[in-house]
Structures are given as structure tokens and as C-alpha cells.
Length: 173
Image 1 (cartoon, rainbow, N blue to C red):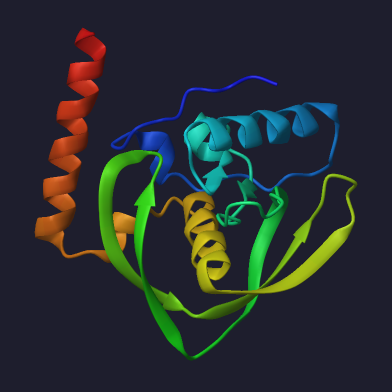
Image 2: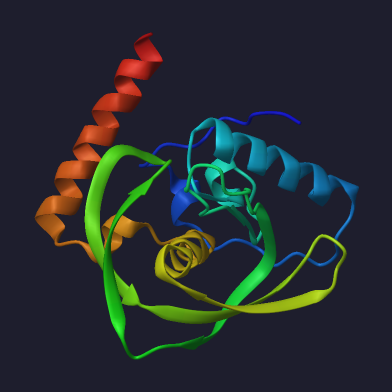
């Protein structure tokens, strides 16, 4: 497994719609393993393939945070929300592509998601709480949408300027 570099906003690849995965093969399984490794190393609870420069509809997530609880690494290929609750919840979101920036985002409190697993089988699950927020945030990445796109233009521009400065500082280092 390899820890892959995570793209930092603004990067045009983060605003593109990712391509559907046609078939599950060893290249995709390697990508999934690398994404999980990268996500845990960051550390984060979710990662979308476009964030590591791969324009495919693949996300990884693991929202288990409680000490002593077993991790639940998930790989979702071509995930799509098939149902969303009318009830919403607000959660302070962050993003590995927008480091150290957080903002409250309101989303459906529960969602049902269908996806393909690493064996090519169709899976479906209803998510609530942090899992619901995370899966929606990662699916947004596949559609070229970032959590800051839910914010007002002033706040979004301020965060974008901070990320441009961070990228310049990293380039000089």
C-alpha cells in the first residue's frame, strides 16, 4: 500500500465530475487500499479518488472514532444516494483537500446509498449521523463539489485564499 499525495484546493481536478467505474480489477483494488492507507494516515474519515488525482467514482470512509471500537473501513464504488430524509442535520465539516478549515454544512440527516463493492457486488445501506454526513461529503467530491460550495461567497473566497497561500508556502518548502 502507498500513501498518495492529496490534492489541495484550488485544483481544477477537484471541480470535475469523476467517471463511473466499469469493472472492478486489481488496479482498482490497489487504488482502494492506497486510498484507505492515505485516509488513515492523514488522518481523515473519508477520501474520494479525485482527491488523490484519480478521476473515478470511488470513495473510502471509516467513521468509527470511539477508542477500543473496531475500525470499519469501507470502499464504495459508483456510490449513489437512492433516498434522503427530509430531516436535516448540521455538522462541522472539514476536508483533507482543504486542511485546517471547517464550517457547518446542513445535509439530510439520513441517506440510503447503493454502491458496488470490491467483489463487484451491489450493496446498499442506510446511514445516519456522522456516517451520513461523510458519505454525502465524499459523493459530492465525485460530482466536483466541495463542502465550501455550501458556504456564502465571502467565506468561500476567504478559505480559497488561505489554501492558495498554503500551496505557495508548500511549494517554497
